[in-house]
Image (cartoon, rainbow, N blue to C red):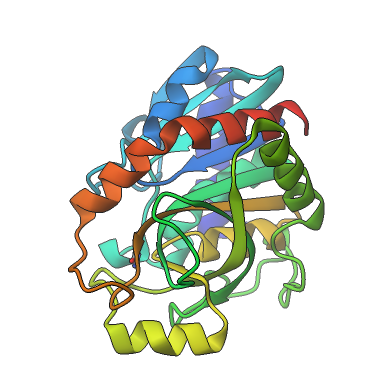
Length: 273
Ligand code: HPA
């Protein structure tokens, strides 16, 4: 066992000691979506600081608490707050939580985020099911010594975002009357927002939305064989799409505004897994 797998096992052990021994699904909540955790019944709340080796979430709008319980008839573990690459964590730490979920035997994860809309058809506040991603972080969470306990050295990435879960989410959205978009998420390092020239370049590459998370977690989840669903809240038109500067407060305000719909979609998907 490497030091890394030791730390993963210790964190998983600490959660098991709190009665959290797995779940039907894990849900990572993006900026402004932390309130989703309030909908969980019989909640056990574990602040990140109480979990050994777990990186703290320090960004405004990210709470930093793991909430386990029941939702729509399923057992769930939600993470309100995530570590980001731009905070200076190595990607192995950014994805530490994902590793712990894998160690607990959680079979699937829903990754949510706030993202800038590159596709000019997307309205601000739209929800986008992530069909695929482009990792422009300039790094990969699987870089490092190979440990077969974590999965394959060269894991396949042809279907990172589960076709089955995307179809299910599309169906749930249609039934609930929630409009959803589909598209490709490009992950960038940040923390500066993009320039208009970068956004034009990403559009040519085939990206529909841009954000600073999700791709590393999805890569690690797939290496471990978890099913992944990704949902972006299009919190703003990306840089240069409209003639207005970007700021984190606006991102938060939009995610807060569409939170109700987002929660309804998540609950619907969880209930029909
Ligand atoms: N760019 C990058 N990350 C983001 C954005 C954006 O425009 N909006 C929310 N997260």
